Image (cartoon, rainbow, N blue to C red):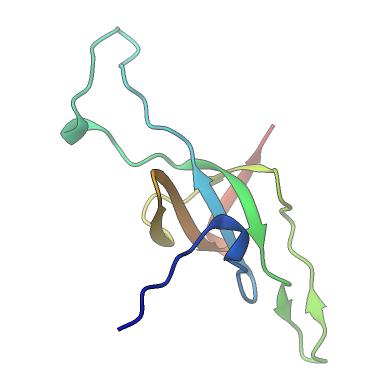
Length: 103
């Protein structure tokens, strides 16, 4: 089997998919307690690094996505496919799994 090398620039989502770089998880609680790796929750916030062309309507034209590259988004906890490229973590989501754009 051939090895495939991926980078962020080579990933192009299809349809209404969005490629999001996951934000780092919290190292401490609000009270200052350090969290071990086993106690950390999966972050639900990230930055959009690539978007697909959009879903097709009945006429065959693409409907543009509401998010764009550079947007910081809040997404569903168990949504998407987790992908690790090097030391960075990403998630590939459908646009419907994005709950909000964070200002």
